[in-house]
Amino acid sequence: MISVESLTKHYGPFTAVDHVSFTAATGRVTGFLGPNGAGKSTSMRVMVGLTRASSGRVTIGGRDYRELVNPGLEVGVLLDASAQHAGRTGREILTIAQQTMGLPKAQVAETLARVGLTDDEAGRRVRDYSLGMRQRLGIATALIGDPEVLILDEPANGLDPAGIRWMRDLLRGFANDGGTVLLSSHLLHEIEVIADDIVVIGQGRIVAQGSKTELLAAAGTLVRTSDPAQTDRLARALHEASVVTTPIDGGLRVDAEPELVGETAHRAGVVLRELRPADGAGLEEMFLELTADTAREGAAA
Ligand SMILES: Nc1ncnc2c1ncn2[C@@H]1O[C@H](COP(=O)(O)OP(=O)(O)OP(=O)(O)O)[C@@H](O)[C@H]1O
Image (cartoon, rainbow, N blue to C red; front, side, top):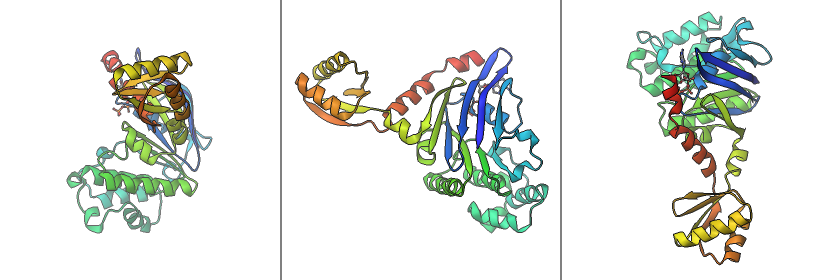
């Protein structure tokens, strides 16, 4: 389990991470989702002892990362897949990790097979790798020590749809075997596909967290009518019933169950063209709002 308690990181007057608290539970894949510059990498760097927190703390299995004697055996880390030595081959990079962690030599071939890098690919220099191959090699380095926890910053970056499915299956298997996975992404879809739990960060602060099912279920109902006047009439009727609505193209997103929306429309004499659970539209809206907000980048400059 990873436990993040009121983690804060200042860079001079700028607050990159602001009292962030969450846990990544054992046996689950937790997605750390946020737009560019939200504070994901900074939080992860603090977790693995590369950056010092201004305040707050992170424990992994109850301990500070810096206390771990041979950390690769307990926590697999992938922070920047492009930071690997470009002149070395994939096999050489993995062999260095194997030797540093004091692992049997056979682990190198086993791990290469586990991440789907062929013998031929493992013998090529990293400078000739595609981004997806670099990600696989980075994940191999994280996995080779057979850790119980994985911390992966944007691991799906550069993977094609088949690669994302492969990663989902790999991480699912890892979590099903009792492991803890924390992975970050700036893409909602990636996190939706891969994660069980989602923590959303924007401008250094947590803006939502919960299981994927909870967050998607909380998204309400999408409703469309035949014309704008009908939509207005429905919105007024819903507001009178103290239900919150948000305009969308050709209709409304409503913070209520479809049954209530249908009954209200019927009573107001509004003809519906579409009525369905929003299936994550609320999360997407919230995420788009976060993504559109560039004030932070301005403040950081
Ligand atoms: N060493 C540093 N000095 C000053 N500001 C920094 C430093 N590192 C990060 N920041 C700022 O902190 C904020 C958070 O950056 P961070 O890299 O953690 O975001 P992120 O969520 O990982 O974004 P991305 O998806 O783009 O990787 C950004 O505004 C960034 O400019």
